[in-house]
Length: 193
Image (cartoon, rainbow, N blue to C red):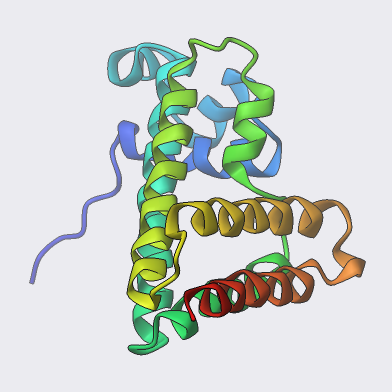
């Protein structure tokens, strides 16, 4: 039998910051994060160099989880690239409808982090690039004549769906985004003929 160890200060800071920056926004105070993590201020500086470093690491951690979620959603949808791409929108409908949904963490971070040199911006750019490449690969498999352009369109629909899901959930943004995604995919099929 092995003893289970409690998370250390670094992990507790990440967990607390990931939760609080999503539920309260990027402007959440350091004191609130430290209190929720039950760690001393010194741990923040030892592990992350300060709040900016912690925010960037929280975003990295979130992007890894979300990228894995996209891949799993698409894998579970089967072999057809069209089905895999539309499954993304079906899955996001559930995300938007979940209790506590507060919008896109990455859009919120980009808007809240006023310093263009903040390390969080690089993380959000890299994340969007990864999602774009994932979508574009599926579009290539689908035989779309303009896969990069169509991936831009799908990513715009995803961003809009997440923003509208937080601000206007009664408009059923997931259904509207899925319908528009179908048009993007089917327009490519028509152009390819």
